[in-house]
Image (cartoon, rainbow, N blue to C red; front, side, top):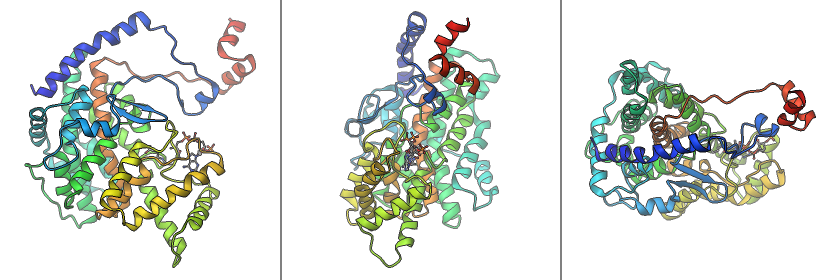
Length: 444
Ligand code: CMX
């Protein structure tokens, strides 16, 4: 057994009694209430999901296993010659909450190399789709097509044991994490580079290998590492993480679950926003014609977008109420590596103007930029200008969080998810009575 799997087994044994005690002795303790606005309004803010892998504070932003993004980067062992940790080190940290030493990281790098081989039929599935299919369709279909490899499904079919179910889920999760960069790079080269595929280099860590297979030179290996890590997890309520958790709760395996999660990520209000940001910028440039961008014409275009009924992509968030630290991390990378990039300057100009416009507009609860407002700038700078690919990049990173979570879901034996729905008549009745419990008391 690998050091990571051993450590994970230890952590699971430590954690199980905590969850069991909470459930058995404190299961009736009330931690939240639900109002009509939340029932109609997408369940916003209802505390009904449990994860220890990351937590999102509205003011501070994400913490992975208790650490902010800068703290995470500082704590983890770095890739050789790089300021950034390897994705492998981060995977260990996400799964166990502990910082691995170099020997432990090296073991995962080696393990991923063995797991990374993608069955050839997966590439055939991608090639069977029309080349103009959205790359997220190719990505999701490729993940789903691999389902026959699932060790969890095999384990289930051969006699299921709830206490051991995390093991095969971990195996599937690790296989997927190791293979997704290969699949994503294949889609990129197949779709946009005339099918000129670059084979993996087994001597490289996941981030460096992804850069290699994309055909992009340094520092794109660091871009890949940073991008995967910051996009990995954003607690459990966002559409992709929640979809993964929901589907896995039916004891669907990691392939079914992550393919479903990717379909949620492909929505314009979620991960597709990274593509939408670049689309918006291109439209803005077209709109400008010969004019140079300035604060005033950015402002006008923002208003035009809002008046046309569209959202400003890359701005706003369901939980955050400040600039997203994932935005700031990428902005700092740009200030260091590409301060004079014209697209970076334009996106920075939008950053100066958009929050004021959104505040004046008065709808968005959070007028500040999220991760997607900045990620495309870096990709564009290093030559990935095919912006409909950006959500695939998001999906390569998001896999780390979703797959770590569903491994833990099985470890802790979380049940099938099944919230309760009500009818509009019921809501109207409870509205009249001043609440469901009042109404129940009246009618009971
Ligand atoms: N531009 C214009 N209007 C916005 C807005 C934006 N960027 N963000 C929110 N609003 C509007 C909402 O559409 C909503 O309008 P209605 O009352 O007419 O329905 C109102 O403001 C209130 O919304 P909210 O409570 O502030 O935001 P939600 O929690 O409902 O939605 C989000 C959050 C991210 C979907 C929304 O801010 C948005 O659409 N942003 C633009 C798309 C985007 O960048 N998505 C990526 C988010 C990060 C990620 O998941 O990758």
